[in-house]
Length: 417
Image 1 (cartoon, rainbow, N blue to C red):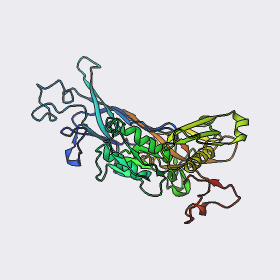
Image 2 (cartoon, rainbow, N blue to C red):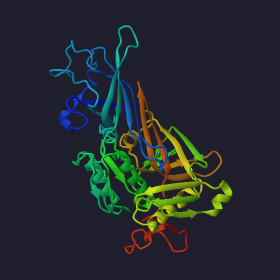
Image 3 (cartoon, rainbow, N blue to C red):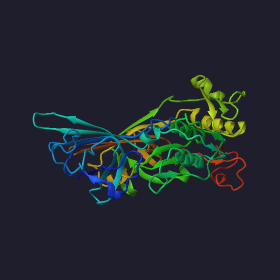
Image 4 (cartoon, rainbow, N blue to C red):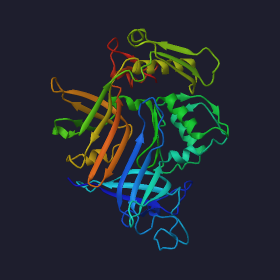
């Protein structure tokens, strides 16, 4: 099988606080071929907040073009001075060798240019990068007061406070059908990243930077498999009906983050008694496992109770968890078209056939993606969490939007809505 063609581009004249259009990027991987790279994005568990995605690219640099100290040698990246600087926009693309379709697999900012000398005449440059959360982590709120509003609208307003661009390609925010969050005045000493993560927690959603560089906020309904599009079916045996084979699979059925007592307090009433939800049967099986969530950005104690009920419903019992699925697109036909556009929050089906037993199928949500390549080898590893395949009634939802997926007295569960 052929390997995807990798292209690395840098906007040498655009800094961290500036926008960069397609015409601002210069390809560096032609003059300075890529030796190896690693991209890691996402989180390890659905109840964690997402940290900044990172990319490490090692390029040949015997020509000195990527050495910031090499100002005496002519370089296409010097224009009246040194432009090989930290904070420059960087974009990594990969072309599917089977379809010739090109995908952006990472966009972010250069943190450092590290020079390595692995031999007497060899020079390499290690480009260490972080995604747009790098810029957000440096920003603080501007003192604005935000009214009670939809969580997606609040996320948009917080990005405005951080002066993050609002144009196409820079944001992908769910702004409807979300939970209502409480009014708040954000002090100029409040870190914008922390404020955004508070909204992510209240929504039980996911906030991350997409592979193309957009600040992305997915609401809680993204976890319900009935509302998600299955991006691919990964199988250990079959390639029929669009299935593609995986290389390796680690499943775990353990007590990771089991919670059977949930204590909550809202941000608007932090000193009140709060609310508590419990599930006694799992307490007998696994002991008392408590999660306390104070400062919850919800408007009423009733909504905090619904939040706790949803967490109890998902976390009181252990679940089959795809700790990692390893994919080798360089060895499996049709797999490039699945791994290159893969995104956090996508829904997948993972099938496995034990040596003794019937086929087992799991619907999962992608939480973390890692691409690693060196020479002729490309490995993609994805970490998954269980999708929410249950049916729900939503209290006070007169439209019946979610009620259609449940039957009264038949496995009915409350949905946080």
